[in-house]
Length: 308
Image (cartoon, rainbow, N blue to C red; front, side, top):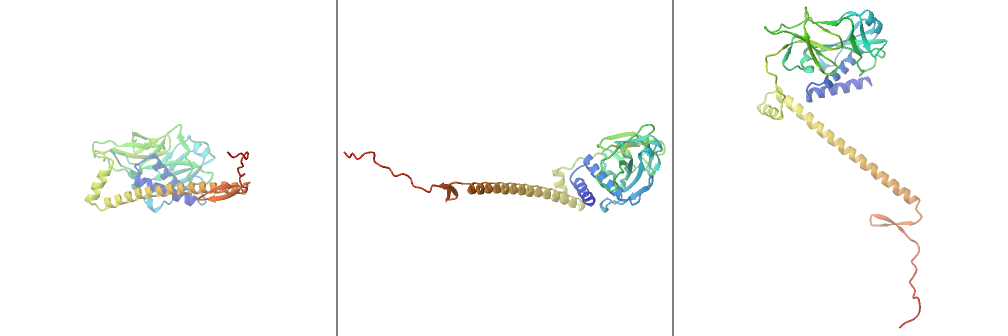
């Protein structure tokens, strides 16, 4: 069941990447896949030790890790260093669980694909910190816990940050679980701060104009002009759309056929029940059945013998 769930989640993610722009549903599908990959890294887990997981080949370049903690230990001790994250004392989760798992994401060269930010350029990869219940380490598609720092914020120190263009000021960007985006100042040492979980990076405003969404006319023009890779992508999108439409039509016809078959069976059952309980003999007339009287009708008689 776990393998099947991960495979279906991967298929849904690939479909979203091909057919849809960025949305919270797309990022949640990615979170579900990475949660499953991270939990598979647990063989004989020790508390407070991070374990790196393996991602599918289609997500090569993405890093994922998991660390199991006691809820009380996280609240009273925090985590001095978990990859690029520094978790202080006083972090609590909702709803409460006895054990929880912190899952780390590093989207690497997939950052702009999963978290496109029009008008901005990434100076660092998108890093994520998610929390899940650690009661069942073989579970998949788990809901996230709500993680929040009360006293001091969680710090994220980015080790590899591209230099910002002259005259532009880098900004911290935060993506929450619902797709909202927030900006904040970058602290000394390429550090960003947060009070809750999510995905984080450092960006800078881009002077390049924001590309408009591709319309059907633009896609057709690009296809006519050629362009190797673009032509291949167009064919993939067209094939997916046509295949989806054909699948919907086939499913609709199948549902209609099943309904007609069920109705026909009900009518036959009613006819069989009527025939088994009938008092009159039935006779077939054309394509229908009608009751047949066995006796004959009374012959007409003259009321008197008077003949004029």
